[in-house]
Image 1 (cartoon, rainbow, N blue to C red):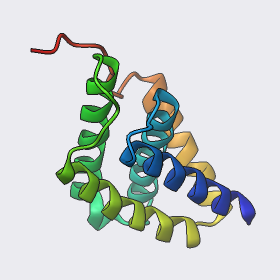
Image 2: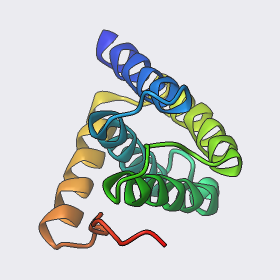
Image 3: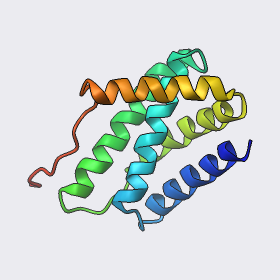
Amino acid sequence: PDAGIKLLIRNHAAFDEIREGRGTKEHVDVLIHMVNMIEALALLQLGRDWLPEIHQAQDAIFALAQRGVSGKKFLFTGEEIGIIQQIMELHDEQLKNCPVKLMEQALDLIAKEYKHKKMRRIEAKEMA
């Protein structure tokens, strides 16, 4: 039972560090894992109606990561912060209502996506 609470705290701490301008690659990785879990749980019936917002959050984190690995700070834009805050509220609810079996299924789904290389690669880009 406390695993979900620890995960919730870790996700919020990573978001807070990025929001305060102290974000690192490790904080971004936490948010990437979080949004992938949000999507997997949604696909498994814990928030399927939120898929458009989940995809917006994935795009926001991807853009943040691209900026960071390209030499800028890991900082969200104002719009991105709103998107991530909204989706974190969804994930908090998912974690409160998620049986262990469903969490295991979500982890399996994420592993399959990774194995089949269906996730976007974050790579440095030249900044104008």
